[in-house]
Picture 1 (tube, helix red, strand yellow):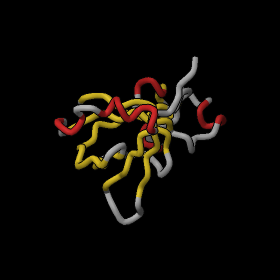
Picture 2 (picture 1 turned 180 degrees about the vertical axis):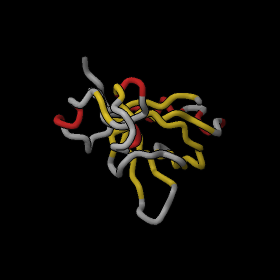
Picture 3 (picture 1 turned 180 degrees about the horizontal axis):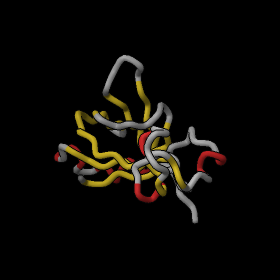
Picture 4 (picture 1 turned 135 degrees about the vertical axis):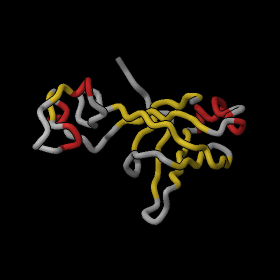
Length: 117
């Protein structure tokens, strides 16, 4: 299996708006996106190490007072395939760059897909 990033998310420290720069070879796929108010971003949580990804049971919200639960029953970022999924508000577009609000990705996270919300 192979997953190829279609772009990269960038965050400025002082802003809630993130810029998603879509690779030029995928830019044609943005046709019509301006008409959408909300989109779903799928991204690779690249800062999680392989050791962290092997954990299959974690405390919900990292709270050790809560009982362990399987990662497939939670929204925990700790999972075998660290794919993040976030519904965001599309606030603008400039050529192959999207500006979104509400993306909980780290700076320079690879974006693997975009879908209509």
